[in-house]
Image (cartoon, rainbow, N blue to C red; front, top):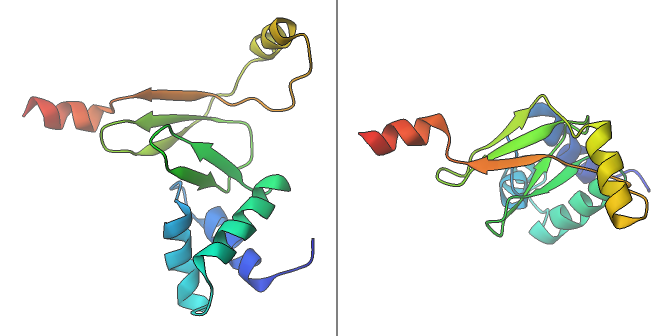
Length: 128
C-alpha cells in the first residue's frame, strides 16, 4: 500500500479519539486539513485501513458503520437509545473461540464481542 497523506490523516484522527466515528464524521474532520478530499476517498481509505488491520469497522445493527483506531482485542457496548458506542476492556475468550471453531468445523480468523442494550444515562433520562 502506497503512502497517502490523506490516509495518514484519517488514521491519525482514528487514533486520537475514543469515539467510534462514522465515515461522515471522519470526513468532516479530515476535510479541515484537506478541503478537496471527497467522502468516497474517505470510504476507500477506511476500507484499506480495515483490510490492513490498522482500524476496525464496527457494525451496530442500525445501518451505520463506525470505525475504531484501537485494534487491540476488546469488546464494545452499543446503546440502542442514544447510539453511543463504548469500548469494553474484555475480549472473546479462548474457550469461546474454540467452541465456535468446533461448531463450524473450520477456522476462525477474527472474533468480536458486542453487547447491545440501553445505557444507564438513557435509563435515568427515561425515568424522568
